[in-house]
Image 1 (cartoon, rainbow, N blue to C red):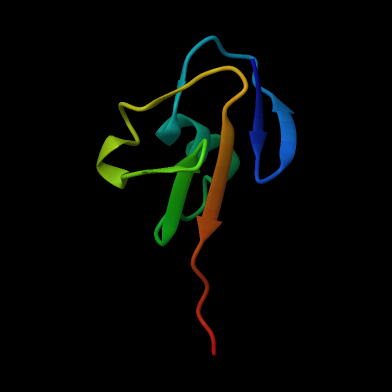
Image 2 (cartoon, one colour):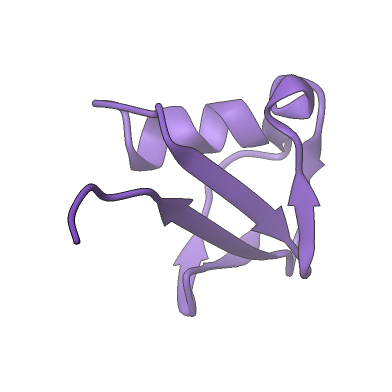
Length: 68
C-alpha cells in the first residue's frame, strides 16, 4: 500500500497495519510525546493498537520537543 507520512510518500509492504505498528517502524526509539493524525483527524493514543491504516492515508506524526 502507498501512504503519505509527513508529506512524504511511502510504500508499505503490508496488507494491514495499525497506527502502533507504523510508529514502531518509523520511530521505534521513543514514542512519548507523539501525536498522530490521519486524514486531518487526530487518532487518540488509546486507539493506536486498533486503528488501521489503509492505502492512500495521509498521516501526520508530530513529536513534542522541549525548549523555549
